[in-house]
Length: 583
Ligand code: ATP
Image 1 (tube, rainbow, N blue to C red):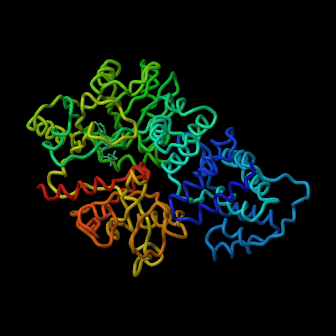
Image 2 (cartoon, protein in one colour):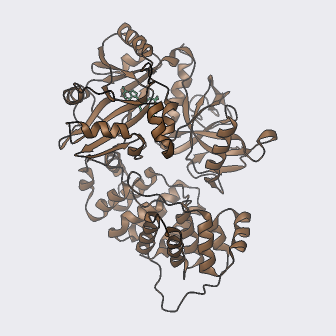
Image 3 (cartoon, rainbow, N blue to C red):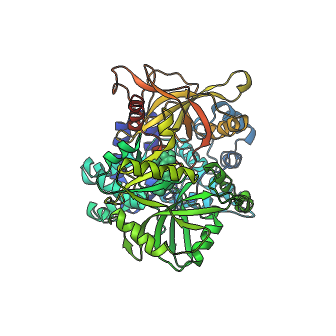
């Protein structure tokens, strides 16, 4: 398949703000893509080289690309830099440069998608001495003899800034329509995606096999499962009324959720957004290596403890594990414990269809008697009335936990779903009006005064899974320490797009810059109010009005473990708004 075909589709996609158009372009592309490379095409559309959990990232330094571009075009690096400073995106620069393709020959082969994918993979896998020159050679070889349009999208891919605004859900819609002529089959694709986390592979199975084959995809070791999520209840009474089976209450620990996969000596740890974080917790890996139990996928909450009094420490203490050079020190200053709460797979058996009570039994049989400072089972108790829940909540808060998780003993593990089978109950729900929420940054206004050269206020949004759309909810400008402002400025500047993202409904709000929705912030606010400006929940409570956070403040927590599709949903905001009047 010619890369030019893909570049032409990218160009059409970049020019539209309509999701319907995007889906249509994708469907057309699927129809002309040979089935043996459809996985590669899917990854490239997402700006990736494979599924999130196993592929290397693209994103080569601009400097290196400028050098390659200079070599390929014969234009000096300084001239390219000048243009780059003016335009801000090297892909757009190369599109506008009418360069003389000096290296082209009459007989050179046109660029194919296969060659682009393979070369990008080589670039991502090249490291060590001499790698810089090798990478420049690879990039130059791709840029020789291509049209401006191909060069534009090659550079966007290489730099990791192809921002087409295509979410997994849009891709699944397109795959369902393109291959089965029935958008309703997206549900089957979504189920397969929730246990296999690899849309490229699903597309290939669909293109070369059938929807039935996709339906039979099940959990397997070392492929992370998208986690089951919890609804939130305002109080124990509401929680109890929602649980259908017997209610099993567990301590809710404020750490980081990890999924552990083990076979023999191979052990891998994944976050809730499916990132491989095995290297962050060497002591957990060692503990599992020494363990007799084998062949499983378990889930738990890893939490830092104070080495002097063994008390749980807040979530932030785990942040140092994210910096490679800090891990050894962090292991001493903040040792961790893994608190297991679920098992999804054991000895070749998919356990996700067993009810929770049975899964817990299997967890207890296999891990209940292990004597280790690093491993525990989450405290659990069967509760049947409000008093029992409230007493267990007091016990949980006493031991430094943040509340309770209430689980329906009869529920199956539903990967990726947020349902009333799991309910979170935190202590702050009782006292203040809203819990903290996680929102994605959509745009920004430049700062004034002390914040000149940085962003002054950030436009935040909530998410609707149904519509796969982000809705605005507030602008936030407080709670940012100077160093957080700089970090955020650097991170967000890489996500700038030249117009509002197609998956954002912003109404009439002016922004100096718009971003690809990617950075998630934890926000605290004392109240949710009706608003004529913001679009979250518009017309759902009162015609013409949406909902807004009043006096929003950044908590200091950048939720690197959450992807934009994992943030607080529009429905949750509406519930939080309604709950304010119950107290
Ligand atoms: P969410 O996971 O619901 O999107 P979040 O990441 O902000 O939201 P919380 O709202 O604090 O987290 O609550 C859910 C999380 O609580 C789970 O994803 C898990 O990481 C954690 N957790 C702690 N204890 C338990 C437990 N006993 N069972 C399940 N999850 C638990």
